[in-house]
Image (cartoon, rainbow, N blue to C red; front, side, top):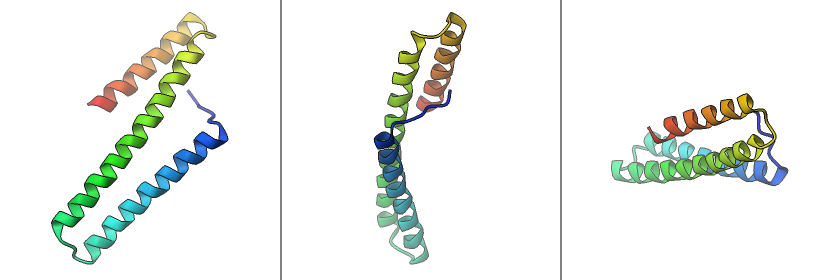
Length: 94
């Protein structure tokens, strides 16, 4: 289901993604500069946490939208959206 996000939410997501992108680019530079492995791994941990936090925000937004929209949908559409949400949740926790 396509989600049209309000401007501020979209902007916040883009800013977070750019920050994560910067972290990844920083890791790449560290590798090019032959940085210490423990320093590289610490940056990887930071990037993973930032991406996890981002994905949790998107997942929360998706769940709210799915639940809010279910009330105004037909039974079959509602079921399909719930199935979609469950699929996303199963893949997220795996």
